[in-house]
Amino acid sequence: MRPLTDNPITRPEDDVFHFEPYVTVLHEAVAQATPLPLTVGVFGSWGTGKSSFLRLWEQRFATEDVRTIWFNPWKYDQKVEVWAALLHTILAELEKEEKLRDKARRLAKAATWLSVRAGLGAATALGTGGVIKGEAVDQMLQDISARDSEQYRQINRFESDFAAAVKEFVSTDGRLVVFVDDLDRCTPESAMTVLESLKLFLAETRCVFVLALDLDVLAAVATNKFGDALKGAPSEVVSGMAYLDKIVQLPFFLPDVGFDTLRAAYAAAVPEFADLDFFWELLQSALGGNPRRLKRYLNVLSMALAVTRSQNGRAPSHASGLQLAMLLIFRLRHRDFFHLLAAEPDSWHILTNYFERAQAEPRNVEAHRAGFSTRLRVFTEDASLEKLLTHGGPQRVHPPDRAEVLAMISTLRTTTGPDGTA
Image (cartoon, rainbow, N blue to C red; front, side, top):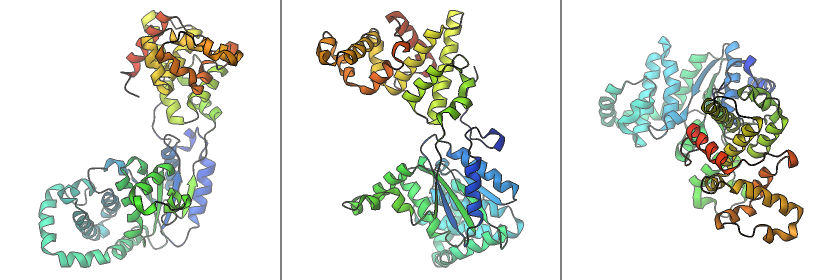
């Protein structure tokens, strides 16, 4: 068994998704951008390779000796103010330069003061990236509360002082590239404050901010934040893209990864089916082309096949392997039907026969399902399940008998956990 990991691609030679040409186009466009700052949005849904794309791009900057910073906002979500953690992450890099150490620490104190005013309090230590030590936070908060007027003056200069520090860090003609990954994994409030902080505090810096997120998630976030203010507005105003117009100057939508590419990349995980077109066609139809979803499915299937091999002392037959693969699809995509099979294991055979007869004689649908249990009757209206059960016509996956169904369900529960989990 060779499990597929979920680690992002980091080297061009591992670029199984063929992102490099798109990285090149975006890299060359950003290289010509003036004046800075510039905010780039790399949009894609969950599991489509945004982190891999960003890591490949980060490597491109490394070959040019351009300074980069990687920020994962979800690590701080619900612990500290995420926008403050972003500021402190950048300042922590600046603080490594001896000539900038004092300036970075002064700016960190100002950022901490902003966090306190936002209600963060002593938890700021978690987000300072080491610029401000945890044991010093309480005393610092007492000091700055006693000197609010001085802090107000520092805050008024924060944007320009921050920009000056970054300029000194990268040199007059340089740039700092800040990769913000998995922003859509944060709470809506945190995601919005990070986006707004780019305009509020960092609008004068020599920075390129690269945001990886799901545009649909952001649309929901924007709607949630503005709530009643957007009621009755045109759809184009309510959309996440409309909100991003003021924040992202260069949007880039991650290209779809072709299913043939995914098959070539993942086939080694299931050598039993690596060359079986029917198997991959079934997965494409049932699971779609999301890389992460497909990867997770193949890992679970590979484990289930290995458990079956260990239990029986031999590899499962070709037919049994496909039945197990189909049952796992039920569990992931048709969970209610999977639960029915645990109680009524003959339902797979009965429902498959029903769909075949209904397709051949659509006028006699009611007669075909006469005597069905109340629970089974519900699934006769499920077009997606019908497509799955009849996929391949005569070459379809034939249902196992009731004992085999129960044995396979037990195997899947061993490898995937209770039915209530994903």
